[in-house]
Length: 261
Length: 374
Image (cartoon, rainbow over all chains, first blue to last red; front, side):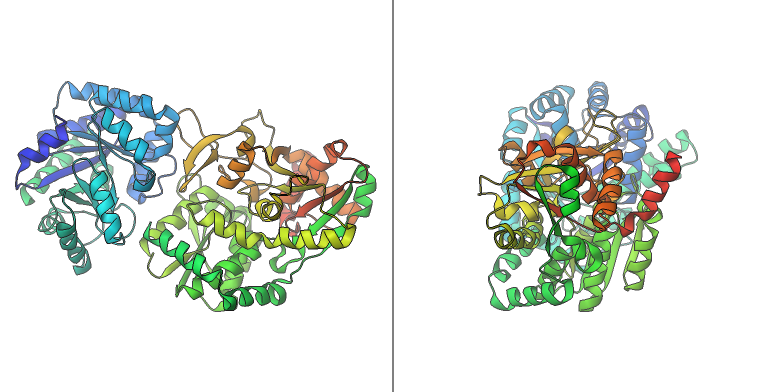
């Protein structure tokens, strides 16, 4: 059984906490260390960002961390190696999130096979729209990789159904129209939209984009089955004084999110 | 996707409406200055010693390049769709200028995303956009050039999608944009068909156009695609040479890839990261190319070649002195290829070059080139 399926099964009514770390930021070794810390601090699943030169769905924090990772020479290959090493130490589900071109350059089939072998459990590729994803999804599932597609506040009801059907285990709900990055808070329109999703979706869904604090996370999980936190973690890492402080701050932030849920 | 579906539905409905086509036609005539002439380049023809060479004079449109054909079309579309805010990306500033111009004409607020590098290189266009009332937003992310300005415009669009219309500048980006921009630019090819019959009693033997994203070329080629006897040549920027790694020759040297919502030829490295293009002309400086060009290449309907920076500069000088017309540095690539390949054509052949824009904006580039040479 896929680790994601098991994780959702076992979570029951509990809320899912899904932190995101850019692979290779601030260094390859350090980013994998953060994944391990997050797993230890109660993360249910972890997203690892595969850096791309032109991350058009991302705000300033993830643009920054992606560029730094690329400057460090990080590639899809080195991230898969990192995951394989990590898999010997943690059993938390891992999803890769990134753009399609690096996958295409790697070779889609070859990528699916190696990702699965490394211990990756799911894929989130925002620039593969569900309409074009038939082959992508079939290949992913052949290798027991869970596919995750995004719904946004602007997504039509018909399309929400299609996305629901094409996500293997859970759906990713973008909180507000826009790109990734911490926002000060969410308005009633976000909550209205999430409560509509709760009715429209058959699968569980996590809410992400702009979740900056434990309070914001707590409000979202009144409607959603979990939250994704990414840019706020990048910011935490950037603002830490040194490596030891960044590890402590990440652990503390994940812990406070965990307790808020 | 919602916004793209809305755009496609809005466009498909509108393009059949008489009131819209009439408004577009009169704006193109009185504001843009269409039809543009098909001009026989007599001295250039004698100089090249091969085919008879004609220029389709897009340089004579308002704002001095073909870009305005598309921005006029898209702003009318935006108005009919009830959008209240206009955004656009620009590299050299020609598309930004054409967008700022139609925004002033139709009284809509305008935000132009432009890479910090390009703002510095193209200061006069930035001043003009400001004068027209547009806000030019500096993009510092990534390489701070056209591809990053495009990413930033897309980010703005997904954030403000309900009230904002994104006027994209070339036949690139997610569907339906490549189709919409092609259709609005196809006025170039349609006029050329009519004018060719009048000028020399038949269709041209060949069409030649420069390619960055490829909007002037596709606008010229599209109405001729089914005329098998009309040969077509798209000329890319070879920069410092195809083997130098410093070029923008996407179709000649790229591989199929995905950027900004389209699957098309693209230049990227082994890891799938986009490689920065290079060209002396900022307007050809894009790592991708319109997906329809990729298709026309793969089916063999259009031949794609390239010209280097140096060859383009030489053609820029030659044509200016022979014809008294200063071509844009982009157009100069098409002219440069023709000078070197005139023996592909027979003596009586009529060859039409899409003269995509005028070169006034390129004087600083030319000036710098000469200083670096000496």
